Image 1 (cartoon, rainbow, N blue to C red):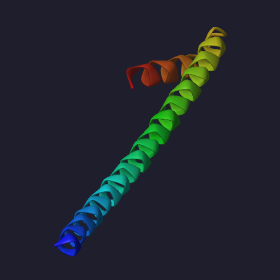
Image 2: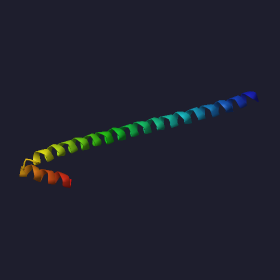
Image 3: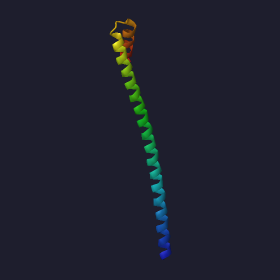
Image 4: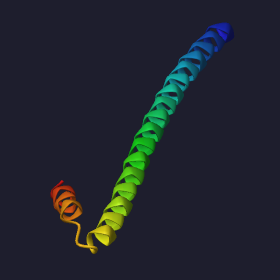
Amino acid sequence: MATLEQKRADEKFLTLAAEQKREKENLHRKIIELEKKLEAKQALELEVEGMRGALQVMKHMGDDGDMEVKTKMVEIGKD
């Protein structure tokens, strides 16, 4: 009788251990997915900041009266 109970307890333990392992793997995949999304977001933010800097430079260059630069600024501003 005790061995049957021990066997059931062992099976339950193995089932719970397998379930915990699956949950841990799922959480690990989710962490990796979120890290990739964060990296993509940060790359876009960096690109936006670079474009803002380029726009500021163009604005200062446009103060000299260069019509081509002013036209580019208007086009970039529309985007």
